[in-house]
Image 1: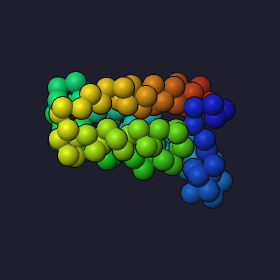
Image 2 (image 1 turned 90 degrees about the vertical axis):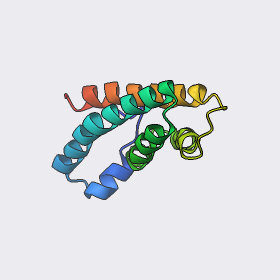
Image 3 (image 1 turned 135 degrees about the vertical axis):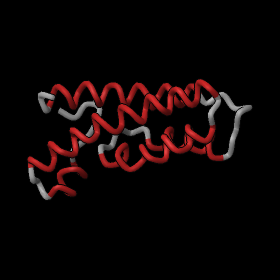
Image 4 (image 1 turned 60 degrees about the horizontal axis):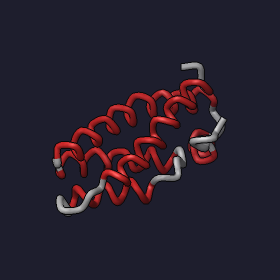
Length: 113
């Protein structure tokens, strides 16, 4: 457990309540997966507004589960926020997407979801 994510902050937030930790893991799978796809689509279409919104929504959960890509996600968010269409943000997006996909697979396995 925890090659691609960490539960330290999750456990602290949940006060080691295993049911709540499971709920947070399920929420991660539902919300972050959906937001990551929205982010990927928005960047691919040059949709700065939706890219900003998706990245901004993902930040707290990415930070809580300590995926290690918060700074990369913020760069993608800022690409959208400041409409930096002349900047190729896809390398940062790929880093975020890889981390999210790895964490999703690992959380599913670790929590039998």
